[in-house]
Length: 611
Image 1 (tube, one colour):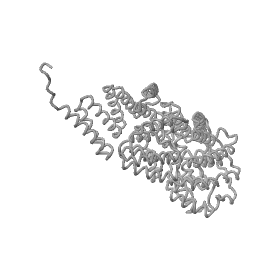
Image 2 (cartoon, rainbow, N blue to C red; image 1 turned 30 degrees about the vertical axis):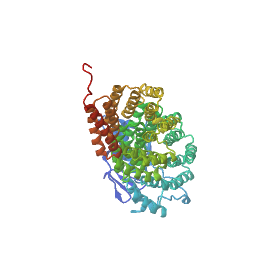
Image 3 (cartoon, rainbow, N blue to C red; image 1 turned 90 degrees about the horizontal axis):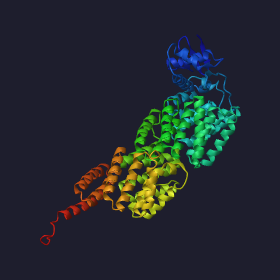
Image 4 (cartoon, one colour; image 1 turned 90 degrees about the vertical axis):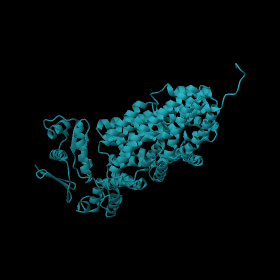
């Protein structure tokens, strides 16, 4: 048994205590034993089998248990900026490396860690403690004070940047990460410098600054050089996948995401593995591999969120799934993940939800008919997106347009859709549905056909929703052959578009086509299918629209009782969701139904006897 001093830590095996500077740290028994074993044998690496047998003598456990203990140990070491001392040796085991860190020149800001940082109560120790506790505002303030007192190590710059990102202020992290790249490089730690360079590429990409992102990505490649089996290489491949996606190269993006996943799997690094896997799924979805893509995404999120990841990585995992769900119209899955995302954010110190999180939730609420809350949330998202993801502003404006359209505020919807288009986003299929409401069916058809052109990920992922709407509009504008062609494309690939929303929209399109062909009974059956699908999703507004069309058909078929039943259901929905548009349509249908009932009730005209 012994006492081990490393960095600002002191581990005492006799008292089973771990101290950081002047305070005792709570640590789980298995984590303490794991660190103690590695410190006791710091001159060599320990195999997984050796560690498993030592930590769980006589008990059969999986390697996942050891990975979890190592992840918790790394979290403990992070409090003293020593997390890099714990090395994961692929396919072998772990080692603790206690070589003193190379310190960069003071002109790059980090200073000798032997001075102020070791002082009890110093700003830097308090900053690190606050960051570990996910008190991001406090951490950012203390890091700034420690920087003024020249107490920072280079790794502290990265933690400071993380705190700022978690506060929704990524732009302020850019100069800190730039300093970190320079400091690591000056100190000869080129591979370490690659990590903040990749983070800079991500931040600039999310700000819509593709050229700058590509520059930092190339700089990271230069720093990684020949270390092709490193964690940094895996992250570089993942970032490359995102850049290829932004450049509308989904096949190349998929290949890079696959490489990232393989590197993470080989290194047993859950962060790299989950990021590679989540984007592999994302681009599979773009290319039509729906089932496999969804499975990749769901597993990636479970893998990452059950591991030691920071809030930014967690946000990336959640957001990636939610973008895909929303673009595919997979509202049931989107609802499950948005609720989980909100809970996860609050559990990781992100009390102010990100702009993306608000946007995801706003669209789900809009689909479910909570229109006023959805509008308030998307407006809040617009403010936040301007700071943390301005590239998504166009999508937020599209969602705002959809909400106004559902409510019947056509002028507001048009303004939002135009703003979305001006921001570089395609506001379909909502814009086409608005044009139908405005009597501009030909313009709706042309705009939907244009939306199918392109190879960007939003276009590829929204293709099912656009095709289903196009089929309806084609039938409405007297293009039955085009409508049938599109419906056939949707129905011959049920595995590509299994979502209830797309099946509902396809049924509506078929009903439109059958109505034009005077096949009213078949049209009514398709609308009943659409109602069932929308109810399955929990979208009362869309179901109400289908019911209104069904009621019109039932009146034409002479089933006034059925039409009245549908009207009553729609009226209840319209009042519940407070939709002026639905209320207006209910009034119109009530008038139509009253007229049809009165006409039926008229006495038969007298005829010639025997006639």
